[in-house]
Image 1 (cartoon, rainbow, N blue to C red):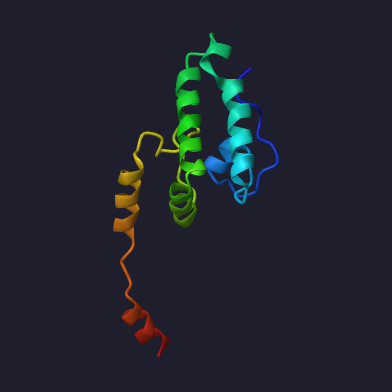
Image 2 (image 1 turned 120 degrees about the vertical axis):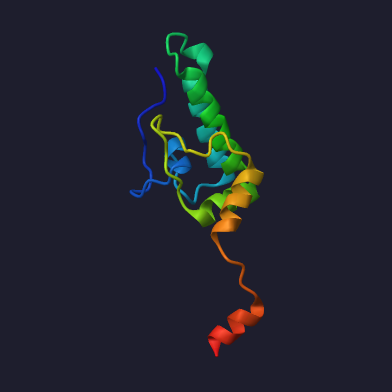
Length: 121
């Protein structure tokens, strides 16, 4: 038992999407269905002999939390896939959305409409 092998996903590994085995353009309903299927498969109660089952399940919950929230998903999509850790889950598994927002906001300079107009001239 455990998490099934990856299904039809984009050739480019997109972290959270690959973990849920859905395409990056998956609908909210597809994401919900994939989460439920995987949550049942890797739930600690279904895998009593797997010491990592709890952490896998918690990481899966975090992935669903991000991809099921429109704003968090947009930030994740805009910033690209995030590098996974040794367990195969994203390194953001323990970060709050506010921590992610602050981190990524600091990575990019704000550009004003005036600056864009000057650039276009």
